[in-house]
Length: 187
Image 1: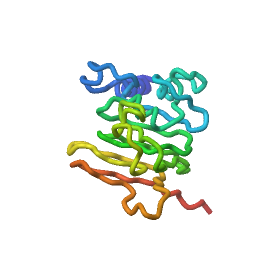
Image 2: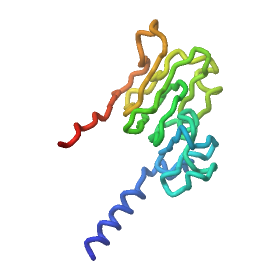
Image 3: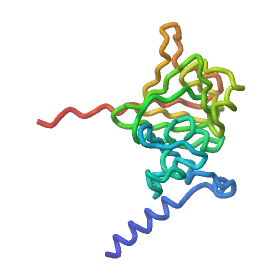
Image 4: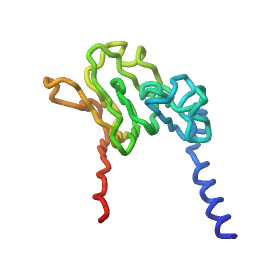
């Protein structure tokens, strides 16, 4: 029983840890993490922390419906986005280190549309890219100390003339693209 108490206590300590700067600035989302549910989420300036105890039915704190709103609710310094149920999402500009994790079924699609203004960290689309239309589905402009991770996300520029799917214009440290390969069925 004592061993179980140590494990539970350790897990609580690990979950409660953050950086001193995140405590000082008071981010709107715990641990700079936002959740997206493309089917049942609701966009608001406080959405995104559903899996940290809030109800999916609570429109104020449940998951966001769009990736743009989840990114807008994160600080401009970056964070994590978990897409729990996929959908079609608008274009984005990533200006800091961020990790976007799609569902294992790869149902999250970020699509370029020439008439759509992209979303970005810490701001809604009208404030991103100077209000200009998106030029790519995902445009990475992060700094030299940043890492951008995209996992289980399909990126579609929806135009055969767009040869570069993800332009990288900043001195980014690294980009990690991951896809979970399903295991073969057991026999």
